[in-house]
Image 1 (spheres, rainbow, N blue to C red):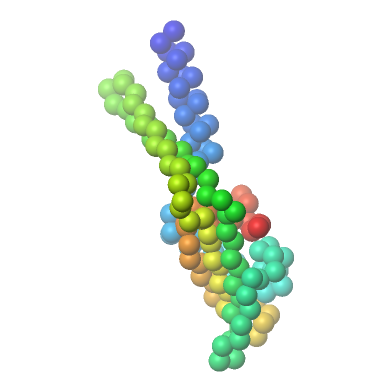
Image 2: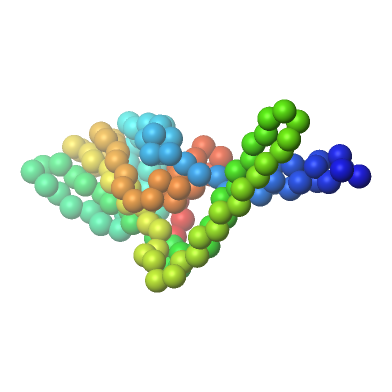
Length: 140
């Protein structure tokens, strides 16, 4: 019985952990590298119409602002073990008056045809959701 409960706990923890993926800033930077040198029209197909477009000193800047309508509660799960013992921790956060998660993607182009550089700012988890290889589409 004890073994069955441990297996159930481990399976449940893995499922919850998989649904609560987090991204480091370095991972988000690496995801952006996949779009470096992209034709601008293909980038617009992936990310949608830019929120803002400006020309500065003959260079073109395109910006996409993606923002959650409301911040969501988050669950973090940690597990560990040694010497045949298992331990787990659960962390919860709630959006009490916090600011919504956002991601700003900025592309620069010298000719409005090819992306010269890309950068991002905002929440790395929120940006990572859009840029991760399993789901590269950015949606509103």
